[in-house]
Image 1 (cartoon, rainbow, N blue to C red):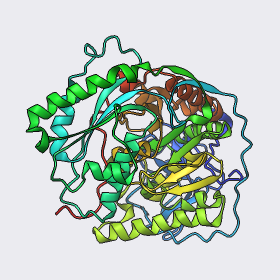
Image 2 (cartoon, rainbow, N blue to C red):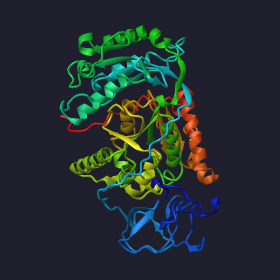
Image 3 (cartoon, rainbow, N blue to C red):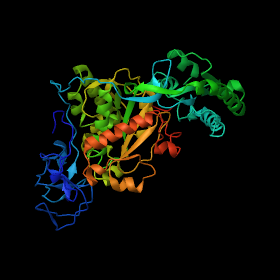
Length: 516
């Protein structure tokens, strides 16, 4: 392993025809590069069972109760004796609850910032720089969701002809906002999401649409977050407007009044340090921690070295690998922040009759992942190798440059909603099974972990990181390609998910607590 204990790839002789690869010389399992058949001998090892591509093969005999090692880290223990050459998966590998990491020494080394890279973005009065220029229609409650969509739908490509600097009018509607505890964590999450969208660098104008009697009052959002109504921040209330139809007509009129002023903002050169990148993965497979995640981690490092920010999230999907992040913390307080969120999640899932090993999903397991420990070790690679500078709550504003961790669920739409609301103006999303996710108002760059899936879903994938295995490309080369594509996307190059019209239904604020 390297100095930062980040998973690295060691391909025997860099031969893409090898039957399996080993990620670290300390590992007791390899990853099949093709389907392995019982009876064949590979690298002097007899295959005892059929092993699907991407799944694990035991390199040595493993006794019952003994740790199974991948990435030079424990991914679980053998639930029975495993012979060398056997398939290692759910029937013989079980999860072991991780013990709290005790970190007394930190490996973080200050990053030397050399800000020379640029992109073309939308400069805001706040000092932030946007990568897109949207008008956002935000429903304060599910009861106003249909009205929000109707207002946004009135501004199709035809209606926006001549407004070349506006990327669209988007509705941010959701399934909550009432029947909730106004003093609870779920309510606080929602309020931060609203405030984050209303002040987002990718948003040039905002219209809040409420019902009138909901728990999540629009005026409360404005007051708590010191937001002032004006030409580019307007509000509507269905009950005060006289009903749904009149609200939609009034909303269309208000948005129409914003168009000229929002369109005045044009792209101009901005430093890469103005980028805040959401690091996300979904539909993961065994290749995620081998190809796309480490390559994205390389790109994140490049951005941080430019003075930019990368935001890692999905607390349940760093579980078991939190010690790797804690060692990179700038201080004991930052490390403790990670541990506190892991503790919270243990209690939260226990209250809801679950365990953190309910993850990986069935699709993850079909792709070769067996335990949450294995998944997490691959997931943290998205965070690269730079110091962890801060830990923030869900949708809490990110105000430090560098690598930041944001607490969130592993559920992709909820996690990305929080990252965008925290200020991320760009999203990079790795996928192995083939998630077709997209987001607004921040564009989402999709990165495939394997060449087979990339070929199958080429209309949805922006980059193929699977070439690290299929073509022996280096992580550095693919990571640099990702970084350059991120700069191009920030400058206006459209992503596959934008071309496919995704992002309107992926706004999912994280709901916590009882619905009453």
